[in-house]
Length: 359
Image (tube, rainbow, N blue to C red):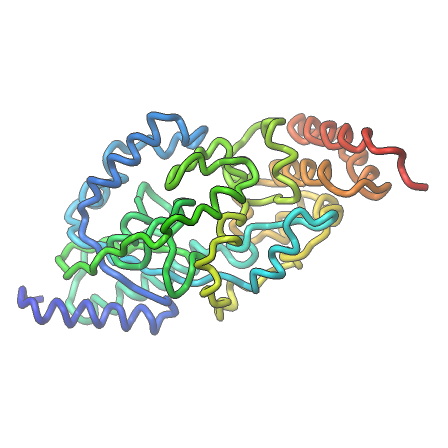
């Protein structure tokens, strides 16, 4: 393509339009200067807030320097896609429900990696049809990419005090994906923060993981504890986890900006297998074969059946005392997994403190 700035502006406009036609709610463009974010990442790692997520410290500067990860990259196209499957009122009713499980809303439907990746590849093909051969690479939470700082620079929103990206017209219930390209595009104006003095997300965090504005100690975060952590969930956090068996949405559920969030029209993100309101006992009864079948094509697959049972055992320990709950736990007292057995034992101990089992 020519170096004419008008042509590049037109191409940038076309890319935004093509992105919307492909189902993205917004597309923006960033340059590759993430020096400020690189400093913040370094400080976060030095504090050990990444816990067992060793991958956050790997790859050297490739995470914060796109041109090192994909040589030749000079611009990054960032897209967002809404995923909220329902209204916040019904979700709030599920938090700490006496017998139902809470699954983070992003994980209820099809694996978002696949959905966004296919759309971004289609966007790359559109661009190639316009400009010819294109040096590019698609990322959807799949490589060392600082996606939220890139999205902030691309004008898609600002990083809130809970460290999620917030868009003033759409809240924060959306996925992000990136397309690294080897030609210059005019960058959008970076968004500025609109959190003001609000600290709702900090105050509602069940485990106090938001240790300060814009700073998360992942080791305390329920999403980390139920998804990233491979071993025992620390006893000190088990009661606070409540019924959250995969991830946690509290900081988003209570964010005032999410009053502007709109439920997604994407069928792929519709809840599967009643996971938006499933009973804990029912989920705990899934055999590994059932679990594999019912989580096919789901992001939940990444934790494996063992950790799934570990998480539900903790939630059952926090559930309302009943014979059904205790019997379900007793059935899993002696599995082949010591990890599951230990969490089941803890859960049973919680119910032993209740008055007596109902007849």
